[in-house]
Length: 151
Image (tube, rainbow, N blue to C red; front, side, top):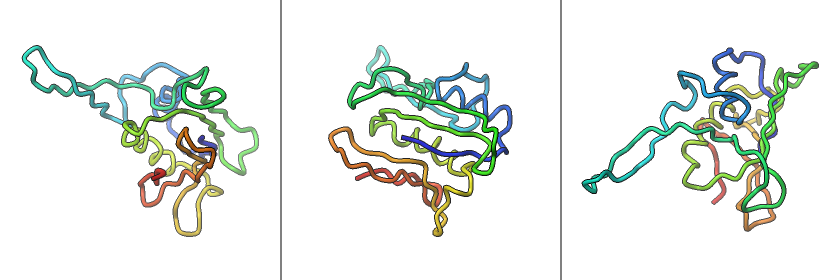
């Protein structure tokens, strides 16, 4: 669950790509935030082939599969900007196989987060995370550009 406010320094290209990742807009021609989406497949000769398959990382909407409730993503322009110019909320199910790709997007979001999300040690609070088997949520934090995923 992401709940954060973003500063007003997002370019139109960044906003377009973020909206795509949230399932709120079309895929931009050029991806600048997360640039590669490797997908491993086997060709007709049994050789491993890596292809690029871009997909929104936080773009699922509707009924959740592994947890209660719904999957959503919302990005709103704030009228009052003392927290940040943009309010972002996203509730998603992320498979551990997607942690690396999703981590790239979350690390980028941390660089754009409003000051109220920054801790004294320089890390950035983005929301909460938990494994679907657990009811205990843990802070979702980016520290030194790296997402601290639950163990």
